[in-house]
Image (cartoon, rainbow, N blue to C red):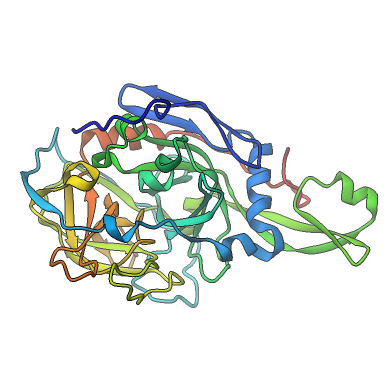
Length: 388
């Protein structure tokens, strides 16, 4: 792996997060970095309240965490991949509820959604991601750069949440606040995009159930989101949405697989192509289907040496979305065997025509294995209050 040295002060840090007053503590154990996001339920309350306030206004105002057009260039072949062990898989899980009566497209997995966060410049941003199988049905797979703020010399992004099935400000299966983030040490410490993947444990989801007018005393005692207008006090009540995997299922996981196999990729593209054309809105997920490259890919502009690629004309916003091996259209489940990391213009015509992913090997599996065994709690009480 190529390790990229950062300027002084940009190594793994214990990071003070933004307005919610959270603290992220980075801890490396071998090749695995583990970082706090909202480790206490009180912290999760602040994050949930931020995104739920004003009927999800912050969600609707977020923009894709995009690439600069000058960074979208051609990738080159670097030779074959070398697996570091035997191929392996972890089976997917289906959701425990009956299928919804109406879906945008039966081919779109319920597990895919948007990852929302506040970046180091204070902007509301989003990437793509998916629910992935774990022992406690509480894990999200996405790109490392959608979790770790490498642009601003910080550790994890602020106010990180996952919204499966997100559509125009609506969260059909709830909002899930990030609790801990796991990635390869080389990505967090050295910005090594050969390790641009992350797994995030999330609390039980939250649903808003409506507003309730109360007196001043009840308003002051309430620990959840609340608003005053017109001289009246209202509580914005919530309810526990349950575990992520119980609601939408979880994709399987695969590592050390041979390249050159067919995958389906999903995500929410939104940014314009380098030539300025903007065919996507980011409102609904899109997908691509094809065979991954048999050769490793390199990109000097990000010091990448071991990515895999796929012909796909999507744009940023799609990053963080899963590459699903053996995808079953009827079950809407497969095996996460990659995550969209970068975008390329192979023919130099100013349009994205290729996407790349890190190759998932045994070291990727080690990061996933650590994350999948971490338990998380609920943050909504029986009366609609958010736990402190």
